[in-house]
Length: 153
Image 1 (cartoon, rainbow, N blue to C red):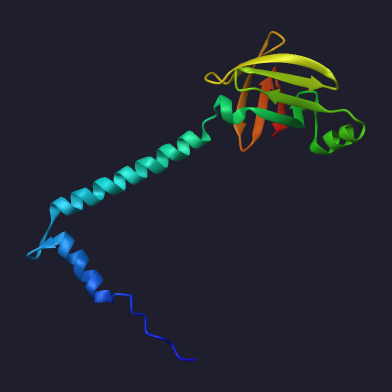
Image 2: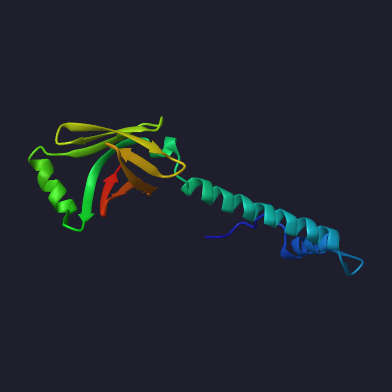
């Protein structure tokens, strides 16, 4: 098999020469070009950092949705994901429907509870009881009175 020469590829020396032409004028470092390059790199870094931060911040629109109970932990014991699977086989489910208007409905074995939440404070009001919550990787974790309930979207 014979290889065809690449006609559209520029040789390495011409690319190096162009870079040298941009950053050096008459053998001296072109400080303006270097400052512009550093400024552009800083803007790109800032954009990446802000993008990561905004993507990880919980908002009412990205937590809205349907959740199922994954586990419960508390001082008196807990419910594992295996226990949740067994309960589901018996027709016993705990679900959470979160709306983007600051409200949610928890359904525990057919009994519903209305919930309000404040996305800025990351708090909930569940039947008059305050709770805190966090949202990460499609999981909503509610902490209240030493117990922690984890719901999966």
